[in-house]
Length: 129
Image 1: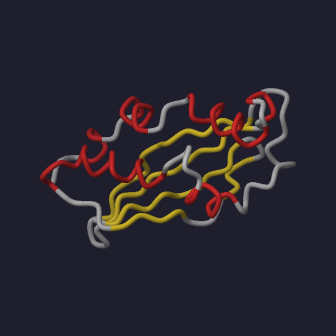
Image 2: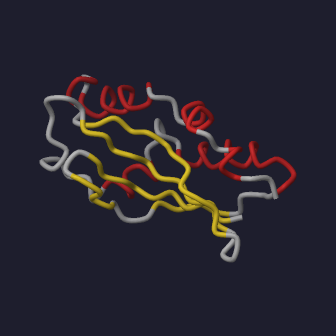
Image 3: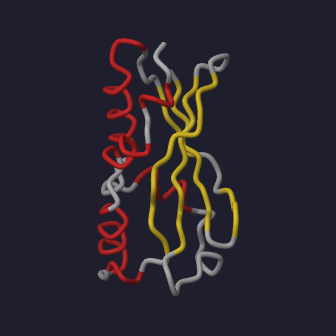
């Protein structure tokens, strides 16, 4: 299998989940993109060959002048998994396309939010092959 790190660079992740999705999400949620406290960013974390899982993370990056800690980010995996604008199922389908003939995505899931720091929370995206 090809080196996953080379397949899923930051640039590729930004194409799969463009930075504009954050503003679109908050526009739909609040009617104003500037009401959002964070930007959402997809990043590759690693490949667990023994479990046949590819690990990504949705970084919730605090916006200047906002407070990520003051926002309710722990219920977001459930919201993100169902929200049509974020389209995590479509993200998994794009990952499947990039994997090509080397592997097939069989399932995906979002795990519980991790508080990495005051200004960064993360939602793990697990892709099962």
